[in-house]
Image (cartoon, rainbow, N blue to C red; front, side, top):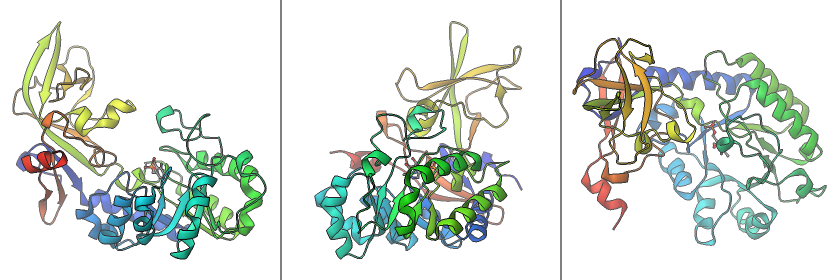
Length: 377
Ligand SMILES: Cc1ncc(COP(=O)(O)O)c(C=O)c1O
């Protein structure tokens, strides 16, 4: 039974539980077949209201801040594998309390905090930078020259600090297993000499395992070979893959305006507030029932409800003219949306809900004036 969007109050992010479970099951299958650990990267999705579903599949968590590490502990019931470009003295003790693994971005940070990490029994890693990525989006390329992420092979040298038990690298963005193969080859060439002394290697995120056509068998073979060759634990921490293509942002047309022959449907959602990746990447999301522009068909820009001039995208064509009250349903709006949204302009935040065939729609979270007011003072 398809989701009945007509009954859902907008604006609302709607997670499709079946699609979510399909992703979780596939990622679990990889984890078991390759005998690796797979962590949910909270930076892509941390709607803890649905963590009870995640818990059924037994993943760990990857955190990049004290808040994420604490949420992992409180709501997923696990200690996080934590990495941050730098840690602060005022929060390091709490971060360690909620973490089983911590990766440092520099030798300075390692020197500063390794002692307290060891005292707390937290496994210590270093983030390395292989200086190679095949990401074509600069904003998502942590390995480009001048990057602030990780220690390069030159900086690492031949001496491996004895307290270091693991290496962490992150080089990919929405990548397939063949991109991982290339990164692994460079990583082994540059850092392979350190591997025999390590307990774990974290291969970061960017593995879009749940994308149609992803070669799961190739990934499993790659990970299995790597694990067999070097012997330690192999860890992946994808974010997007967990909630890729698992739901929608449902909005309503409030008005249609026209300027210089361009028609804009003004929506009760915003690209800058609620779909920031569309502007940052940039990319054009799919709208259910619409296509890219087709000459001769009713065609519109979608305009956000904020006052930012650039808060729009275009163009989409529809079978019929749009009118106020029509629903506009953006696809694939669950990862890197709710975690990145803002209340800029005081724009109300879309609710968050989950839908399954048996129970229908369940509202998980609604936002109100107090949420807006409490962010500031
Ligand atoms: C260190 C690290 N790990 C994991 C991820 C998750 O990546 P993705 O959501 O592309 O799988 C990111 C994303 O920026 C990251 O920086």
